[in-house]
Image (cartoon, rainbow, N blue to C red):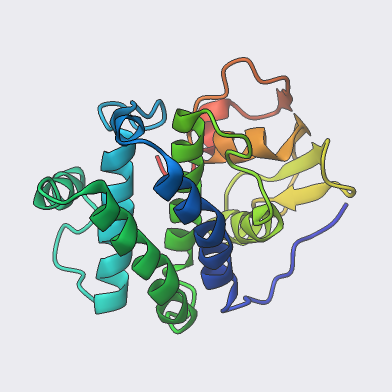
Length: 222
C-alpha cells in the first residue's frame, strides 16, 4: 500500500488550481449562454453560473485577504452570487481565471490551513463538468495532486482510516488516520467516485464497493 507524502508541498494547491484553470476556462468560454443556467446536481438550487460565481468570489477573497466574519457561510455565499448577478458570464469566468491564478501563491504561504480551499475549488470544477455533461469530472490530469491533497487533509483531520484499491491507480492508497485497532475501511472502484464520496457528491450509478464505513462518514465538506 502506498502512503501519500507526509511533508506538505506548499505549491500543490496552486498547481491543482492552475492545471484545472488551463482546461476549465477555455471550456467555459466555448459554451453557449444557455449552459450557464444548467442545474448542478451537487449543489441543489445552484446553476453552473452560481457555482462559478461562488468559486470566483472565494478565490478573490483569498487573493485580497478578505475573510470577514461568517465568510463561506451559506448566507455569505448567497451574497457573493447576488453581487455578481449583473455581470456577464464572461466577467464571471474572467474573475475565476484571475482567482485560480492568483490564489496559488497565497495558499502556498498559508502554512497549510487553507489548502483544503484549493481542493474544494477543484471539486467545484468537477461539479461544473458534471452539469455540462463533460468527461473528466473529478478526474483529469490534476487527479494525482488532488488525491495527494485529499490524503493529507483526511490524515490531518483524523478521518476514518481507509484502504483504497483504485481501478485507475497502480498502487493501493491510504486515506485518513492510521488504524489504531482493527483493519481500515476498504474501497474498491475508480478514483473519481472516491473523490465524489469524500466530497459528498452523488455517486448514483457508479460501480464501487465500500466496507467498514458509510458513504456519509467520508464527507470532508459536510
